[in-house]
Structure formats: C-alpha cells, structure tokens
Amino acid sequence: MTTTPLRVGLIGYGLAGSVFHAPLIAATEGLTLDTVVTSNPDRQEQARAEFPQVRCAATPEELFDRADELDLVVIASPNKTHVPLATAALKAGLPVVVDKPVAGTAAQARGLAALAEERGLLLSVFQNRRWDNDFLTLRRLIADGELGDVWRFESRFERWRPQPKGGWRESGDPAEIGGLLYDLGSHLVDQALVLFGPVTEVYAETDIRRPGAETDDDTFIALTHANGVRSHLHVSATTAQLGPRLRVLGSRAGYVKYGLDPQEAALREGGRPGGGAEWGVEDESLWGRVGAGDSPLTGGGTPVPTLPGDYPAYYAAVAAALTGAGPNPVTATQAAAALDVLEAARTSARDKVTVTL
Image 1 (cartoon, helix red, strand yellow):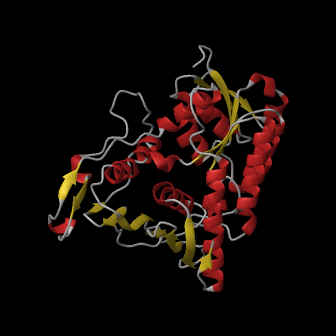
Image 2 (tube, rainbow, N blue to C red):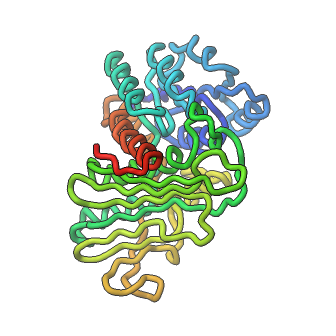
C-alpha cells in the first residue's frame, strides 16, 4: 500500500452512494473520499455533513475534467447511466468501480471489460453480497466438506412490500434496467456462479403482482450448473411469509439459514465499520443449522456460528488491486457471465421456455 491515500470520486449519492459506497470508502485504509457528484443540493449538504473534507460537483463532466486529481471513480448512479459513465471514466484514464448491474446486457459488460484492458485500467463491479455473513459461512461449510456434494442450492431475497415505492428501480421503461430480476437477481445469480460455476440451462418465471407496479416484483429462477448442481433463486417484494435466506442440500447434510446479513441495516442506521462495535456480527439466535433428517424449525440439526459479514473487504481488495498488491475482487467478465444468465432468464420468462447457454 502507498502512504498517500488514493483519491476517490463518487458519482451518485442516493441509496447506493450514501448508504453503501461512501461509508465503505471512508472506512478503507488507503482510500479517501475526495469528491461526491450529485446535482441535488440536499444531497450535497448531506455529504458535507458526514464527510466535512469532501468536495462536491454537480455533474460527472466536472469530475472528469480534473481526472488528474483522482485515482478511482465509483459509479453509484441509476442503472441506465452505468455504461456511459464507466466508458467516459475509462477514456479519461481513471480506474472504475461500478455498482451492480454493471450494464444492461452481457455484451455491454464485455465491451467495458475490453476497454479497460485496452487502457490498462481496473474495472471492478460492486457485488457486495459476496461478503454477506451467510454466504461466507456457506462457502466455508462447502470447502470443509460439511455438506458433502451439494445437490440443490435455494437462495432467497424476499420482502413484503405490498405497495410499490415508485422511482426508476420500479419503472417499466426497459431503458431504466429496473425490476427485481436485475436488482436483487444480480446478487443471487452472482452468488450461485461463485459457488457452483457455469450454468447450462436457465428457466424463469417473472410476474408483476402489485396494483400499479410496472416491472417484475415476484421472480423465480432455476439454474442447472455444468457440474449438476441445481440452483433455485427467489426474489420478491410480495412475500407475506418469508422463507429461509438459504437452504442448501447435500449428500451428507443440509444447511438452513434464516434472516438477512446485518450490514445493510447497520449502514442505513448510521453504523460504520471500525466504529467500535463488532462489524457484521449477528446474534446467536439467527445462526443457521446443519443437519440431516429433521427440520431446523423443530430443533433439527446443529447451530453453526455465522461468520461476520465483511463488506469492507471489497474496497480493501480494490485498494490492493490499484497498488498491485492483489487481484481485482470482482471482474467485469464475471459480471458479464451473470448477465448472460439474467438475459436468459428474461427470455425464458417471456417465451415460457428453458434456455440453453
């Protein structure tokens, strides 16, 4: 690591920028939040209140005009802006982190990856859910052979939000790249690929259930991996009774885990990594259980301590990659593979077919 912190420009200060990226950047040794880009005066005031030394700019162009004063650009603006802003940043000679989904199509993601390689610049995708507590715990269980050969992976991001909130994330305009398939689905597909590798078949069901909703709010994706594992992924805003976050079945045992990683809630409430409390640690009552033959809901299986969630590890890895001390934690090529699956899922749901990749 260099002794001088790397200067970061953050484009976007809505949910993603203010709740996730800014606090995590500020908490990372070797990085400093130099500039926040937002045209909203209230958000500029919010950024200065939390980070008194930060500079504010109203447009991305102002940021790119002084590219020589920055070492990294983070794009946390609406999905439809990801490709044009990442392209502009790379052409300005700046390494880039892009929030998920990096693009609307796999072809666009691979185009960005090619541009970054041509310019010799880092292009990384913020797939923070790779550092969720349950996912880290599951990876360890699989690596240690506790489940045997995994046969089926069930993963859920379910919510009960019977009234649409509106905004671009719930817009029916395809240009906005909204809907749960590309929002929460980006996380679940990425996790499945990290765990079990390439996918050969994709089947999906997408529905718009809530009155006034414009895009998918209740989606199911079934994946067949090349190694034979089947992943069943659920993303929904219309689930009145939430299922387990993870249910993973193997030849030796299964792992069932309820409840969400605590990091997002902590960040939303103003908690910060390194702020004194143990970061990413959940209560023992939420630990998952490993066992065979009985339901965890009736006491079956053995409680397994959940590893702490670790979103700060992503930006620590980015800082290391920028200084030549480690690899890119999430490449655009990996993100493109997930987009291949998401595009196939959209086709499957629309045409009511199973898509072969």
